[in-house]
Length: 166
Image (tube, rainbow, N blue to C red; front, side, top):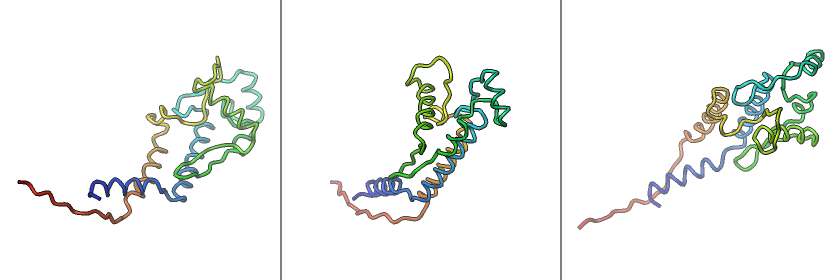
């Protein structure tokens, strides 16, 4: 194996075996970030969500809730939201089927997968949000976690080859 092949293999092996604790840390951080953005009444890109109609905003305010679209869905969405680690990945979901359907419907509307005239708001960041200032800190957090993995000392094994010219 050449030094180039050894370096490539080392990087692939290192990135493809992210320790469970690192995935847990990233999952916890993303979970909290997603809800902080939502509870502030913002889209994942940092823009504001659509305003509520006056009657619904007042009802939420009377129940000591923020009078804007926050995806809390009577608290059920926040309570049933979870993440789990897979093989080098993190997935998010809800352990309540009604909540899952409600939340997924809004996400699909916002992403244009389902036609909708109103209520186009998202909970989860998507690729285009990664360039926004609202996602900057969470992306830096993940980058630092990955850089910490790559920064650990490792030993590469490669063979030297000699090419004679002439």
